[in-house]
Image 1 (tube, rainbow over the protein chains, first blue to last red):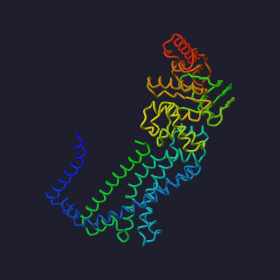
Image 2: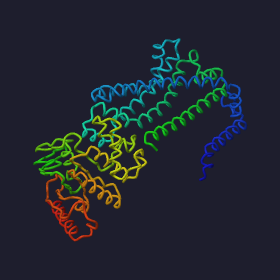
Image 3: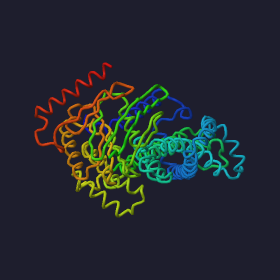
Amino acid sequence: MSRVARLLAPFALIALLLAAWEIACRVLHVAPYFLPPPSAIAQALAADWAGLLASAWNTLSMALIALVVASLVAQALALVVGLSPILERAVRPLAVVLQVTPVVAIAPLVLIWAGLDHAGRAIIALAAVVAFFPIFSGAVTGLKAADPDLERLFDLYGATRLQRLTRLRLPSAVPYLLEGHKVAAGLAVIGAVVAEFVAGSGGAQGLAWRILEAGNRLQTARMFAALAVLGLLGAVLHAVLDAGEKAGLRWWRGR
Amino acid sequence: MTVAALRNVEVDYPRGRALGPFTLEIGAGEIVALVGASGCGKSTAMRLLAGLEPPTRGEVARTPGRGETAVVFQAPTLAPWLSARANAALPLELAGVAHAKAAGRADAALARVGLAGAEAARPAQLSGGMAMRVSLARALVTGPKLLLLDEPFAALDEITRRALADDVLSLWAETRPAIVFVTHNVEEAVYMASRVVVMTKGPGRVAGEVAVDGALPRPEHFRTTATFRAQVEAVSAMLAKGMAA
């Protein structure tokens, strides 16, 4: 299969599906509030372009702030926990409980704590909670992932605890941290959108708010337009993070 | 003079006995090969000699101080994030040697194993044989009195492992450290060692030993001589008996 064909294949499929959708809507006379044809969505996109982009940036910036917060907290905590097996045993069950609790379920609580006028803070906090775990567990795993023979070598040469940490454990954890951050960034966006939904149209200006607002007015094409932007945002973010992870690994491994 | 000795050592793991009772004396400048089947406790014996693990019973005597024992593992065991130079310099860095001095000595060690010019390369950019040489340079950088090689060439192709065997012998000739190496290749054991210790199947005991005739480092074509063949046969026979016991 040629390179061009491989690159074009997903776009061809999307075009095909869109065409089928458009034709079906027209032939079957589907009500536009129920399922607007792609052409109507494209019009909505064109009309709302600036506003949608601003909302996308709003959601993305919340998610990125949350990612930074989660990254700092998770790595600091993993470092403390990684150095003490007893602490790790103590923290693990709590971490698991927090992790398996759906973010939607704790969102109203966080909203109250953040103050109803500060929906932004609540959104960042919730997105950070979701983004915390992949980084935390990646860091904890990574800190223990050093080659056992390299560990023996450090024993042999009488390395101090600090030398072992800075020269062996931390560098060994890098691939796990890269992977953790990639997963966390994707989750942060999801967390931010979910939190926006819970915060409602009053407090947030992100993409979820666009979807809610258009939904309340039964402007289905505008809902789809916001969804399309959200999907695009996710895809671009994923591509960027994937490239970032690969670049990070290349730097770590030297090739 | 004895550099290291295991005297009637036994090592028990939760799943059973791994080694012993086992006795082995390593003299200064000696090259000893430990030969035995997988799971006979060769690697356990090496960890005891390195001081990385205490025996359950028995006595371990070691004269080399910190940094005077070096280990080369089956895999190169290099830090992927470090250059060849930084990998070779690691033992010195851990001992607190100044960075520039450590780098200089690492470069010298890399040159000794034939890797001059590859100092800045990362392990991922090196072939298996080259990575093993970096591992060897890292072991030599401290000027060890006891060098432990735990199946160091097992993962390499035949040509590379022969070349490395010759390199180890010529490196040995320079500073004459005591070398203990583990292998399950009988020819390699006879070729490299002044003494071959054959171990029984696990838990390993001494099945017998063969003092190898012939000067070290080996003369050219040593592998084709009748002496070499005869000693390979002797070790093989001893190994077969040890497996049956």
